[in-house]
Length: 257
Image (spheres, rainbow, N blue to C red):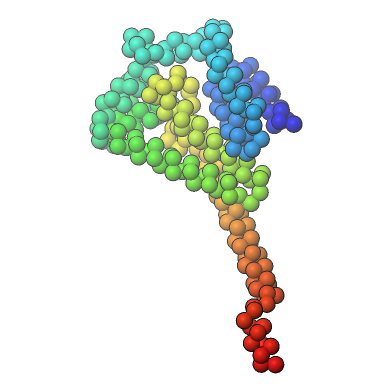
């Protein structure tokens, strides 16, 4: 029965492999794994699958030479500046030139035809350059607060289905933020995953806002359910107190009679 939640994932992964879209595979499997773990359905299978994936990562990477663009990105994932991809190198230049306080909003130099995809995949590099270390930390803290609030709403939803939906939405945003920031800092190879609410793209923004609408609805229904349960509990307590005989009151009534 623990394998049943994984069955709908197989055709999706197969289609992504045929495309190929490796970053989509990483994001999709991470989302499903998060839902299984936090939803209580993952258990041993999820942990074993994750451990096996990490253990076989080197073997998998050795057999992807048939995908030239992916192999070139992996070859450029290094600490050697002479072998690093130009996009990652310019990203590190942008982050380093920002300093503590940054160059000022709109004063980025790297985005002037130096840093490719500066409005999409590598927007966080521009944030670091213009707002500096302080601004980058502030953006990360805002994302953390946003995710904590979203997961809180998911775990306080009115039913299990809403909880799993909320976990899936927030897991998507969490993994996108992690992958994007990890890519621009050369912690991960270039994956092409955008930064939610920052990267350009109308379709992405529309879908993110739609997901936020779902989260707002989950939060409202969860709050309504909690209030109804609280009122029901108070009514039960009131009825219980009415039926409870207080010993002192009973003694006085007996004395008066």
